[in-house]
Length: 318
Image (cartoon, rainbow, N blue to C red; front, side, top):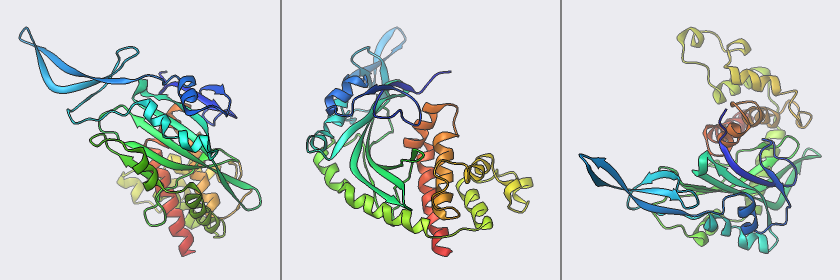
């Protein structure tokens, strides 16, 4: 089976997805880029087609990887590629000042998505031992239609669940930059704000969820919002209950009491929310790297945002 991860390096413990090669946690961004196998550049070249025996320009350009000439994507004339070196240099100031350390980096989808993750030296703990660490994720897509995404990403230590952190009404943790404008690191850093402020806001939300009790009926309703049932009318016409939930909702229900860290906040909306993140990060998907991509860049990243929003709404109503 083909894997999404092309190359990857990680510092510290083996990541929850179990992928990559180990490195020390004191690497500079440039060293991490090299160890992760993404120390290559991209270049735009004119795109041509053969028509009626003639080679004619298409009006588009191809973005190629210089090391092997692989075509990563076709782009328009106004595309502004960002080199991997620029993405890793984004962390230089933070690492040199001791505020962060490089954690993981790599290439997905044959070079079309390059990312770097740095651990922020800032965390919080609730319920007497449930610790959440903060990370800064930089995704640099070499793919048409994808934007550069820089975001703070909390990770629950006890289970390595990547938690959502994007709620328009409560906090804003990410900055997206399209490839039709020039990437300006200083502007992004200013818009992103201070990690400690973001984590303080998230700690308040987590504490709020942990202090609110749920009941069986509201939990079933919550799971159905996060993992909706099929549109089949034969199912929709049945009363909502455990037996009529979608497959993934049932998996989350099963994980409620068995997930790592289930002892923290038993019967609370914090436990309910983490049953969802456990399924998205450790159960769903064909393999580990598919789960990695979906949790950080794909459908499950948005699903966890929705799961957090819904959990807060249920908690507020309880």
